[in-house]
View 1: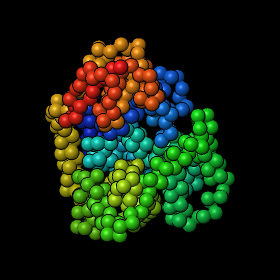
View 2: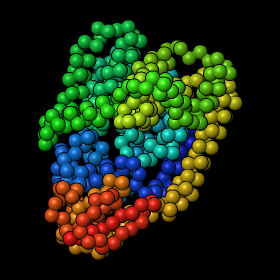
View 3: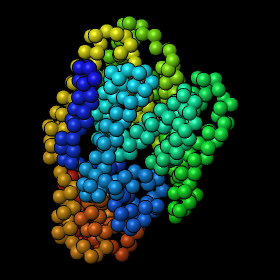
Length: 454
């Protein structure tokens, strides 16, 4: 490896380590406590097929991510680190895999490493999804590997890659459901258009791939409590996010705002790439970049069109995060191909700035935010010190879902919804649902959590 390659690899590792400081300090965010609750109840019940949430059957997502959470709990125990460690590890793996893929395609190690560094320093990766204990970072890794497998299947005409892609599509389904077949099908369609080989889609290896992609999740699904309800619920989850806006003005606003949002997601590299394209008029419509751009385009169009969904007028930007690995490869190609030394220096500078900002974010912002918010873990510990752990505990706190998980962990048993435990002895609530005698209340994030007894 030459000096530039060593520096690039060092910066990839530095970006990874920049996500680690105070990883356990920041309070649970988004769906992190939900993933922990689902996994912990699987662990307590010993049932790894049908997830439950506070004792209720859960049908919104398949259990693959929860299986990983249980696995990682064997290493770090049951806490917020359990889910966040999964994300940071898979973020690093994705960065390495992007580097390897770009190297295999372009036979240029430096370009490959630039692609890996570009991915891991994208703003939405470094400052959010790369460490957040949700499904996205892990999901992105498997989608990227699947897309790369399909590309090699077409370009190298090796059936094993196509069959592997079908297996990966089945695994991806076990993370988020039907979206897996969108990435799988649209990537295959893009490459069949690019290579003008449509009959290949009906070849033996593709048929095997299709069958495997369905068989893998089917083996799990048929063992669940209600397979039909599971399929229907997951379909509603997808369809509710895939509605076109009925407001024409807002639809066209989305057509402009969504790409701008994606540029923001991929800062700071995206700005440099745009400048380079304009300044040097880089011709990128060459093989294999044309193939990559077609894959990105066909997979991107649905999110550009579906401007509505769940009452929103813009699609959640997280849905395009799985396209970032291939985007990073295209960015790296542009930055290296322009053959301007200042461009590479500028890229390194922007990467270093991003990493420094991320370190400051973790070392300074996380502790201050945690101090301001309070601690659900401490509230749970105090509640458990007051109550009789042998009695039934209900939790009706959708606003601060983490309290329900910490109560389950601290009591070592499932804490159910009030309708799951209608004969509850203790109720923890942060909503208008109140019953029994108020024992204690706690302030948290400007709201309150209350403990009742009856």
